[in-house]
Length: 171
Figure (spheres, rainbow, N blue to C red):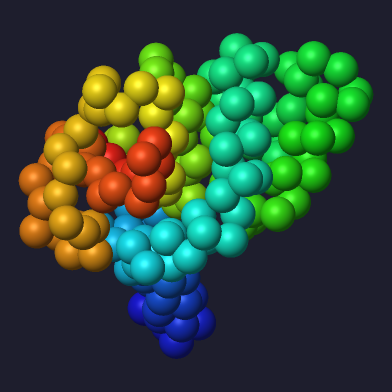
């Protein structure tokens, strides 16, 4: 094997190693198995305290409009241009990437989610506003700042006020 072929082989092997390492890092970033991107309970409480009315308004609007999924980039289903403008204004006051989901009896403001179904479990954290707190779905605990200690396959809640909770869903 001459030196040109050897150098080409080394370059191909190095490129393959870089691609493999990049792929592994991408998977680790997306799945975030150590919850490195999870906001602390204190920061979620601070967000709720500073944006409580915006969150309540978004929750009410999602319920009124019967929209199951809303993000700042997915407002085509808003009833009319004025309503869409109201959603855009409210989303502009929230962290980038925030998503509103509407389920039976509650509205979630998802601040972050991580995980890839093809590679295992995932999780999401944010604020859940319940229409009726007698129908909570999840286990109420003291804090969510140590998510690795919590079992997968459940929803955990920390009370913020009468109708709002910080949630962590582990799938």
